[in-house]
Image (tube, rainbow, N blue to C red; front, side, top):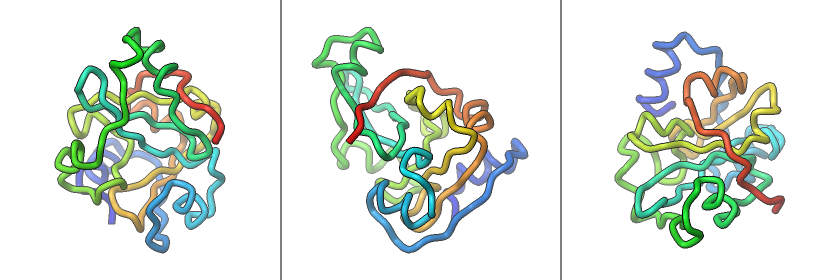
Length: 157
């Protein structure tokens, strides 16, 4: 079942998307495998803090965040960007399971930054608010709905 906010956004905007129900997974790598999607096409959401404020970073599951590069891209000091602890963002997503939030920051009043390598994909897949549901949609449609800031963020894992 999609998170109610995500479901409402996709349906109210008449978005083109498909859903995938899969076995319970906890990591982006596991979810990509369970949804039968390449790790390059599965968009994981990483929670960060920029000067103490929560933000989302969306990148291919095959990559990891480079916080120094992210800080530079945002024009911030290197120590201004850090990974958020689960306890710091748990309550920010009341309609989602912890760690399964969809990559639409505006639904949760926070900025979203997307690794520019995702923009090269025709389609992306991402968590839909639970550890058993994912959504696939054209990348261009995701971008139009999420209105992310595009950055070069990640290193290969």
